[in-house]
Amino acid sequence: MVIVCVPTPLAADGGPDLGAVEGAARTIGEHVRPGTLVVLESTTYPGTTEEVFAPLVTASGLRAGVASSDAAAAAASTNAVTSNIGSQRLRTMTR
Image 1 (cartoon, rainbow, N blue to C red):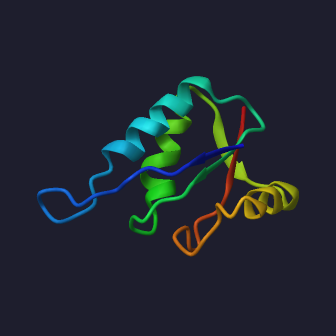
Image 2: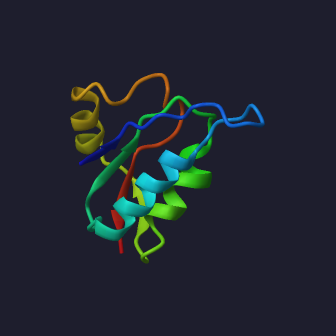
């Protein structure tokens, strides 16, 4: 399980600066293995996981899939799944 919690300060244009999110996603993408649960815990806009984070994590050829209930329960037990994630789905990596 990988839980990403990085800052998302405001950029000069007033929107979120996703540099840390993008950097973390690229680094994870270089090392992630199939079956790994990856959770983005960030105070950014809804859709960041699907639109920004997941494509960078999966650039190596893995694909994101919906987490099993066991994986979701494990993530929830770490207090990683909060209202910041909202309706974004937990993803596991598969080939």
